[in-house]
Length: 98
Image 1: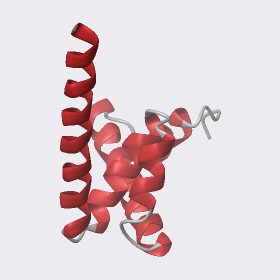
Image 2: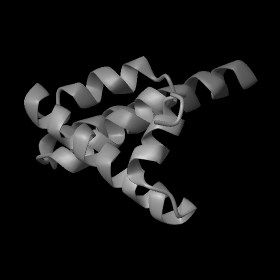
Image 3: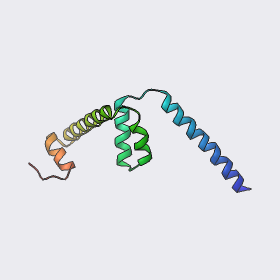
Image 4: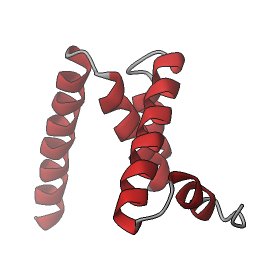
């Protein structure tokens, strides 16, 4: 009996997920929204999400958005740490101080 209940619940959950994916596809995506989703998916090593997000905007727009996100993140961290953006960027990449 519990097995049938689990299968029915699984079908309902799959239906809800499919509907959510369809709703997401219907509205246009902002390139910054795409960049944020792409970077977070990369950080979580979620290949399925990376593939999905890569289709939201053109590769050029995604590249621009990721670059802008990186710049803003380095600036925010530099302000938080009271260091230069160059020092923070090098530290994040594991490079020696210049």
